[in-house]
Length: 124
Image 1 (cartoon, rainbow, N blue to C red):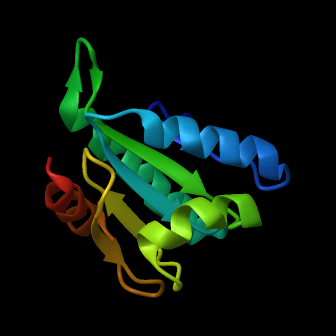
Image 2: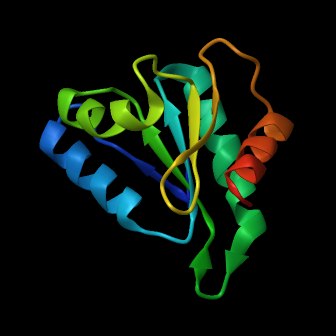
């Protein structure tokens, strides 16, 4: 699966996952959609979100980005828990300044319209 607008965090190397996450969150002026979990359902959400990022493609870069968090390792959790809270959702969207805009809980229905609305809630 070719994902042009997605970074997938390592699910076996905590230091690498932490480094990738910090780098992804350090880029300002873009909406970040965090997708949590593994399996077909998570992969489907990531694919749909990645495709929706194309709507904001500019010559200088994309204003939307997806970070797939397959496993909440301790170093990743230490960064994200203060942002998304103690209960990990299926999806969390961060605004351009890195604050939490919205979440989609685990088990809630997710389709392109719901993901597009989540990106809009984030600012774009």
